[in-house]
Image 1 (cartoon, rainbow, N blue to C red):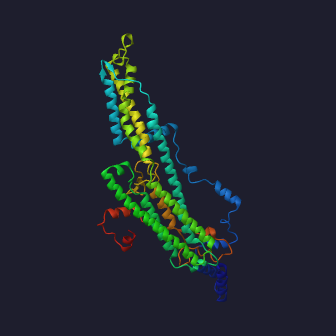
Image 2 (tube, rainbow, N blue to C red; image 1 turned 30 degrees about the horizontal axis):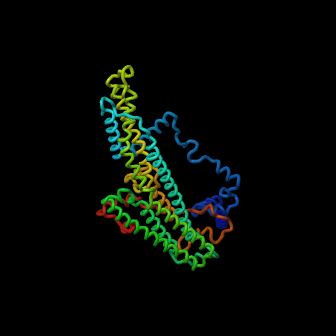
Image 3 (tube, one colour; image 1 turned 90 degrees about the vertical axis):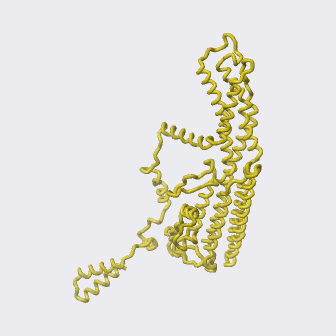
Length: 480
């Protein structure tokens, strides 16, 4: 077009007797005034442009290129000494999170008191120390704790598996409504805003699933065996039941959306596939609900907690026996030359060692119990965003191994709101205009996605905590 414009202007200027150089300048000025940025689609029509045509060799070369974490922007590596120190620091932080609790203080106090009692209390000048067997502790406390910990971890793995099935099938079901076509643009028969309605129903479904899985825990021992706990149990169960009913209602409504596609002419085989996605998502939801509602055997939890609390009392004679073996004093049953002459401070250190050993043994058992307890509910029930930053400041209730259900389902909602640019159907969604009618040259690499901007959740939570503050416009009020 620019060449034709130059030729036309030059001929006109020659007929009018104007200077050839001036005519060429005017032609270039006129073409520059009407010049537009060359689009990707028009570039594909040019024979000399092939950078979007990737051959097999070019694909391999693209794979061999440096990634974002290679080369100059490689993540900093830690030296062996620094890495060891940081690992110990991180381990102590986890140790503090799981063991610096009220229960650990109580168990430690019982351990110290029991050990000191059997060390200091004497009958006829003899200390109450005996080499008690630990066989009972191994099969009554340690073995059930490790077994139930493995079962709780398998529950977490099963929750991750079912969550991936739920996310995959929900997203694929939505993509079927958004993108799938049949015949010669059979989607044109769909009602207006069909995809928007389906998206809204699916977002409501995901929100209800999120609310159910992040509900407070009401299936602990305290909820079923105390009066105050029963009040919380009844209230929590009613809320969870109401949310579960809403989830089932959303699945019922989504079942009809496939019928709308069939009324518009969708073939039976494709609608059957959508039915399969619907069924798999429903099954995954039921599995997630069961994992949230039902727990590991309650009796094993009760036995482990009681045994951990009282075992220092019955095994304190063992620590008194250790003191006797280390001091070789008369209170330990030694006489004559077998009695060691040790300073007073040495006796104090030996007693301190025995108390520390008793406390460490009790805390080791309590630590296993707390780890198992934190995995009892595989879903993180408290996940908050920092008000000043967009980072997670507190993600977990107890452990670091729970499923961040709020984060995972937020990603799913983010996928549900993505659309292709330059679509032309009134039903919403559909393929871009560059792909239908079918072009002579493929334009798949020119497709662009449109991701809407979402109001940050911290703003919503802040406004909900401050209901008297005016929002400012009707749109924000509607979004809240």
